[in-house]
Structure formats: structure tokens, C-alpha cells
Image 1 (spheres, one colour):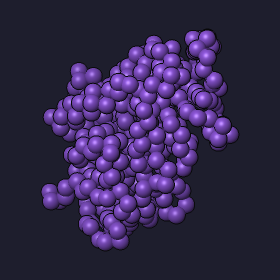
Image 2: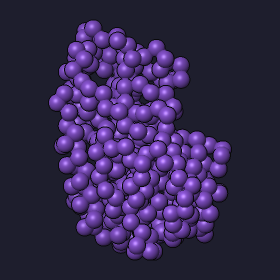
Image 3: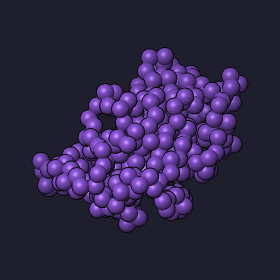
Amino acid sequence: MKVGIVLSRLALKKKEEIAKRIEGLGLDYEFVTNLDESIQRLDLLSVIGNDKDVLKTFQEMRDKTIPLLGISDSDELGFLTERSISQLEDTFKKLINKDFKVEESSRINVNVDDREEAHALNDIALFPKKSATLMEYRLLVNDEFIWRDYSDGLIISTPTGSTAYAMSAGGPALLPSSKAFVIVPVNSMDITRKPLVINEESPIYVNEIVSRVDCEVIVDGVKRIKIKRFFKANKSKASAKLIRLAPSPALERLSKKVKLAEELIKMPPSAKLVLKTLQYEGPLTRRDLIEKTMLPERTIRMALSILAQKGLIKRKSMLRDARRKLYHAL
């Protein structure tokens, strides 16, 4: 069994240490930097990083499929990382002993303006480039008109992503075995607009997109595609294969996500907007947040304080200027 290991920027600094820790385990492995060249000769893939690194790796895999195991590069577990780096030896022993199961999850293929294509494990989202800006769009499913809406955005989620951003926007939680996708309008002007659960085989078409600023299709929060006219979305031919170690903390993950969604529902809109901006933009300074959200500085300070108390963000000093702080969504 050949295992490919993808390292995050943080884990790359510990490459030699990681190699020493797994050298005596009898694991047939190689460090991978180019999935296009490596994936055909690999049986499994392990990403040592955070959830975003796992999602980026699935982006690079495009329509290819191979079982993937996420390992956190810190002691903080994410929703897509099964174990932390402190458990590295034990984790790889489980791979060698085949003490795991593979969970298949549908992915969404999106084609934007017939020019750029991407695959999502969690969700695709349509938003204006500037937060808190209204947009108009037209939704069709199975070539049937569903609605025309005026809202802050639109999320189309897989079962894996249903307990992420889609749930915080009011969508339902789907079990991984569900053969369905969820369409969630975000802050619609029409109170009758509710989340829509559709068969995963149903093609989705969104067009007539209008906003006073440019709009983007955001894939898994890690890839942004500028959109002018329309996008098409449908089930990807290749599913995502996630390695779950025994015993799998699936129920613990779902419980954590439900609790997070409950916390978000109780929060003021400003805190939700700041968290969403950090999730989709990446680490930002307070000044960056003021510019992107167009919220007053006092409101930003209060929102950051609420999110920090809930353990949803963390603050780090910038390497080039320790006096300035970067805020990260967890």
C-alpha cells in the first residue's frame, strides 16, 4: 500500500521530524507536491494540515478519486481531520493495519460561464464581492423555474457541507449517506424563501445575476471564480472518499457542528458577517474587516469579541509587524 503525504505550510517546516517519526513504521510513503504526477501510483493520500488544506487538496484532485485521511498539523481537530499530529505514529499504524473505513461523499461540479470548472466537497456559494450587498438571481432545477430571489447570497451544499456554512444560514443537517443536495438562500428579502432539499442527480442552473458590484462563485471557501452571466451545478462523477479511523468521531463532529450552528443563530448579524468574511477571505486584520464589511470600527470590535468568547476565531501577531493582529476563523 503506497501512501502519499501532503504537507501544509506549517507541517512543511517539520518535514524532517515527520519523516523520522514514521520511518520505522514500515509505511511505504512519499511526500507529494504535485498530485497530477503522483496520484496514479498512490493507494491512499494523507493531508497533514487543517480543514482548508484538505479542501484545497480535493480541489487539486479535480475529478480524480482516492481515499484521503486528514491529520491536523496542530492539536486542534477540524471537521475533516481525524487525528492530530501528536497522534501521528498511532494514526499511520492504523493505516498499515487497515483499521479504518472509507466514507464516500458526493461532490458538486460547477461550471461558471462555460469557461471555468471546479469540484466542491462542502459547498459552492454565490455572493457579491462586497459583503452585505444585495444581489438578484434566477434559480432553475431540472430545467424547471424555482424562484427569482433578492438576497445576500446563495449556498448549494453537499451532505458533508450541510453542517457547515449552509447550516449557519438556516439549512438542515443531512446524513453523509443522503443522496441529496441543499439549496439555501442567504438573508432573502422574501420570507417565504426556505432551504430546498433536492435529489443529488438534479441539475442546477443559476442565471440573470445582477448586483451593483461584481459577484463570485466561491468553491469550498478556497477558490473564487468571477461570474458574469450564469453557472451550472451537478453531481460530480467522482465522489470524495474520506478515511474514517475506528472508532470514528462522526457523531462527535456532527454534535460540534450543530452546537456551532446554534451559537451562530443566537449571534447578532454583525458577528455572523464578520465570521463569514473570515471564512471566505482567510485571515484578516481589523482594518481589512472594516473595509470588506463596511461596518463601523466599534461594531467590528464587538463582533470580534463575541466570536473570540465563543472560540470561533483566534488572533495571531503578524510576522512582519508584531503590533498588528490577524484574525483567523477556526
